[in-house]
Structures are given as C-alpha cells and as structure tokens.
Image: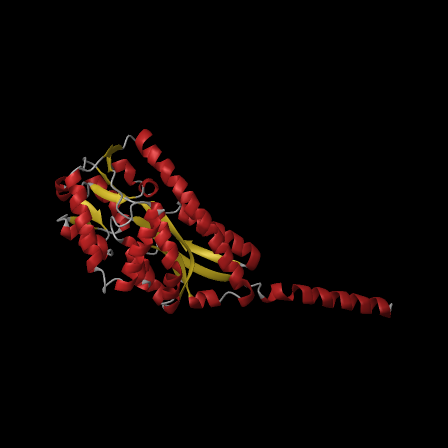
Length: 335
C-alpha cells in the first residue's frame, strides 16, 4: 500500500513539472492595438488571424480597436505614448515620423509600378526596422495597399480639372501637401472618418485611394470616375512598444514574430489580388469610368515630382539614401 502511494506521488510530481510552464503563463498577455483601418478589411482580418493563433499557442490576447474608434493616427500615437494603447496599425506618413527614411517611398509619381516600389522597399526595410527599434517600437509586419488613383464625381483629365476640384488630402502628409501646393491644387484637409459624409454633402468631390481601399471605405458609392494615373503606393505596418513585446515571455518572442511575419506576407499577396478584383468590380459592377490624363498634365507632374524629391534631401531623407534609391531604380529598370 505504501509503495503504491509513493508511486502515485511520483506520478503527480511528474505531472506538476510537465504543466508548470503552462500554469506559470496561465495569465493572458494583453496587447491593445488601434488603427483607422475599417473593421472587415483584410488588414483587420490579418490581425485577428494573428490574434487567434498567438492566443492558442502562447495565450497572448490581441485587443483591436478598428475603424478609428480610438481616434485618428496622431491620437493613437499619443495614447501609445501615455500607455493607454500598446501599439497601432499605421500607413505612410505616420509611420514615417518614426522612421524618416521611409518618406522616400511616399514620393508621388516616383515609382512607375509595384515591382519597382517593392524592390526599393526590400533594400531599405532592415534599416527602417532599426529606426523603429531606436524609437522603442517593434514592427510586427509590413505590407502595402497598392497604388492610389484619383476618384471623382466629375471627369478629371487635365491639370485645370484637378485645380477646379475639391480634393481631399491627408493633413498629416507633408509630401502630398507640397505636391498640392506646387500644382496649385486646393486640397481639403479632413480626417479619414469625415471623408464619406463630405462626399455626400459636396464638401469634397475628389479623393485618392487604392481600388480595394475605396471600396472598403465605401467611397466608391459617391464617385463616378477614376483618373488612370497612379500616384503612390500606400505602405503600412503594425507596431507595438518594446515594453509590450517584452511582456511576452522570452521563450515565445521569436515564435510570436514568426507568426506575425507569416500572416503579413499572406496579407500582401491577398491585397494584390483584391486590388485586381476591385478594379474589375468598380468598372463592371459600379460603372466607374476610367479617364486618361492629358500629356501636358503628365509632363508638369513629372517635373513637380522631381522638384519635391530634391527638396526632401536633408529634410526627410539623406542625400546618400536618395542616391541609393536612384541606383536601385536603375537596377530594377534594367531588368
């Protein structure tokens, strides 16, 4: 009888040792992330898929505030600063505040197609990630939204048409601000959440977005034309603070980042397909007519684009980085 009790104690002890790592990590690690990207979009689905996997494998809970419910991008950054949030999903100009060299990827009309943009981004991504780390942020993954075009209520074929339009622009984007000023376009600065009602009331009659993005935001219901002149590829990333990252037990951190990278790679592929499908849907289902810009506008835009790129040297990025990017573009164009 005594021998049997001893054996049972040994079994219980072994079971206790086996489950100890899980019991010490029984309390969920919560990571609160906010973004203006709407619920139901591919970005949010990607984040929820990551959340499901990391909760199942390592008991990390993602709490996601989508669609601007936690405020616009700058408000989200402020809440992260004061510890009310642990991270955010940001696009273009906002993330470039934390890694200025990324601004070179936002130059309007600099990149002729997605392959050029991806080639340059791959070359400078590691340095951008280091910049974020210097600012106490960890990038969970990078992706892009695709090139944006102009969508409008009236046809926009010439520069004069664009100058006469009431065009939205993001108030936090200095490059688009410079672009608008040089082309004498009177942009209407509005937060993302105010664009749809402004299109309805006529405060705006022209916006820019990707094919998938304009449908996700429902702006396509308020426009009739697309000007086929891609401006810039939208880039985004989801970041969390180093403090939030270090709240994850050390044995799980590498796996956590691997899972995030896997899902963001899938997201990039999915977004490319969605943009292609959305472009077809806009034309066939919603009768959005495509307008080709005239040659004079193209020439003027190219000239202004080069001016803005030169003016950014020393302010937004270094001369060395600019020359590197020029070299990369020559490389990819030769191919």
